[in-house]
Length: 202
Picture 1 (cartoon, rainbow, N blue to C red):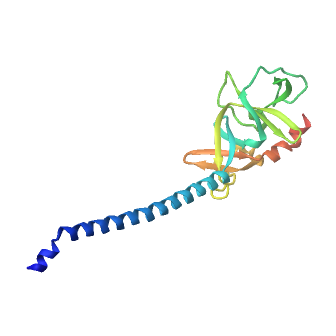
Picture 2 (cartoon, one colour; picture 1 turned 45 degrees about the vertical axis):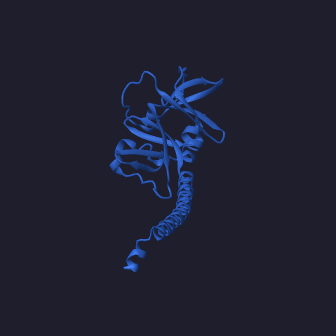
């Protein structure tokens, strides 16, 4: 009977509660440290993944989307009034003045033989630059920025499935970036900037 009373001793119960709380507190401290380390690791991995992604400026040509590396794009915006010039190829619409600089305007749809989606009251431009070459690419609209991780999400090669209407520009493709139902054709800025056809008229 004495043993039974001892098992219900209030002092013993208090000691057990104190020990239990101390144990739980120790577990919480260890868990908190592990969680902090896990959070720091996840944050570092996320930062590495962001650094691996390369940003591209995407724009619409006809019913297709294309993109150029952001490093080759100096500026984007609505195309100012174009001044036509005589004796130039039809894909050069003329010249514009942007921030005091006179630049040629290249109509991408005419240059690459892409059917335009429709008439645009205010076409946009991509101010493309490569080494000493700078000109305005006339596009239908700016579609935003596309971030591509080519290491873990490699670009897809051009195939006839994308349509024969893109055959004129396919030689400038690095590949296609596909996200869901959206396909963005990534242009090779090196090839575009060194194209003999374009360089000849700059």
